Amino acid sequence: MSDPIPPPRFAVRRLAPLFAIAATAAAFLALGGERMIGFAALAAHRAWLQGLVMRWGTAAVLVYIAAYALLTALSVPGAAVLTIAGGLLFGPWLGGFSAVVGATLGAGAVFLAARAGLAGLAARAGPRAARIEAGFRADAFNYLLVLRLVPLFPFWLVNLVAGMAGMRLLPYLAATFLGIIPGALVYAGLGSGLGHVLARGQTPDLAILFRPGLLVPLLGLALLALLPVGYRRWQGRRI
Image (tube, rainbow, N blue to C red):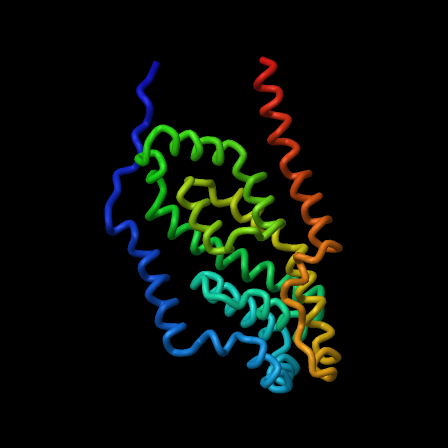
């Protein structure tokens, strides 16, 4: 029997992409960037943004996707407001789809940085951590799909854990893309009716995903995603 493959050798230089992302995010927040993506800023600049969309057309969608990807890669708060902005500017379907594409691209950048710098650390932490990592990698797509469908953990944290586990890129992108579609469409739908909300002097309910009417279907989808994992485990015990 061949010897097990040792985990990749750790080197500080492998953390350079993560350090660069963290430093850029810190600078963005220190300069007050978080205020630029808050609901108050969206309400204040709504007419200006809609004017840009009318003038730029398709280019406005591409700029929105790029901005969403950049802010997702920086892991700064404000994803819900950005998605609402997409619904406001482009409608629920195009806005929601653009938000999903931008979030997936940004998450992919963080994932690659985390995988380059953190992959193999679980194996070095001991056999128990190595077994957990191996279990995650065996059913990584299903586990990640559940974590995206039901956002119980911060988006950025899931990106780092998936990279640390050494998940492959294409399954990661696919699970991320599919898993965030329901939430993105909900928030983009809120954005499409933002004008009426502002006219009443109200703000959108950013906790809407955790209302029973929406959370229960999401939990149902998450359970469906876990069924193949449970079936494989059950088959393994029978053999």
